[in-house]
Length: 280
Image (tube, rainbow, N blue to C red; front, side, top):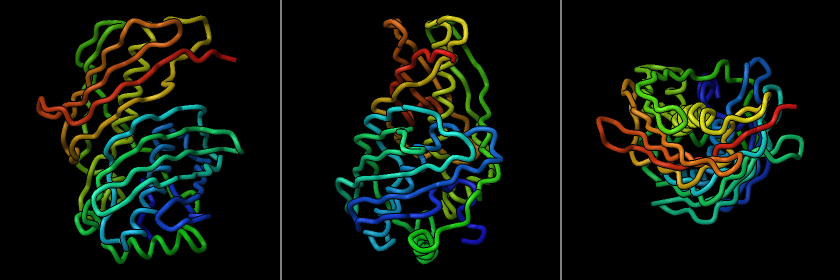
């Protein structure tokens, strides 16, 4: 693959392919990384589904982020581990893809995605069809070189307003240029929805920590997301305002409602169940 797909690509090899209907794949999380955020595991599953769709549509069109009905976060994935990925494509045509998927590490489930739907758009808006076809042939053949990802994208979050345990606002500044844009996408740089999800998860956990409290050694984690929707592209150089509101906790769990805005207009919405994770 040369210099392509090295900064934000999370499928090293497609190990099984049921044309147009599903696939299995793998991704080695580089051991030199300090961590591997859960939204990037979601990205890996989504990219595998995208390869299935692009191959079915003869690389004329490609899917982009849309609606995630539910994502369950079951366990962390760590640097040096291999993600085993699986997707089941329920439908795919010139307009949309619907699928479900999961990721495992050493046979243990890491995440599960259900009711995922994304629009399908012209490939030439984003990348060269011939180049993408060549990359696909590499992935279904000998596979791409492992440990291509040199570093993780950094999130530039600025607090704006906070009511402890109840609500907050923060600004997410999108860089004008960053390595991940060369993958997402070469001809049309778009801020990845999974990086927006990572920012939202950080803020929701931070706010929920006030509301949930918890015993010594407990930390706060996102258990699942529901009805997360990307409504429009986010371009390089823009600033997104993220608003989080926490409902009254029910035991060790609370529900966060999230909206992301550009110039006062909603570009993403969703809900997250946030709960306590007890220490060892």
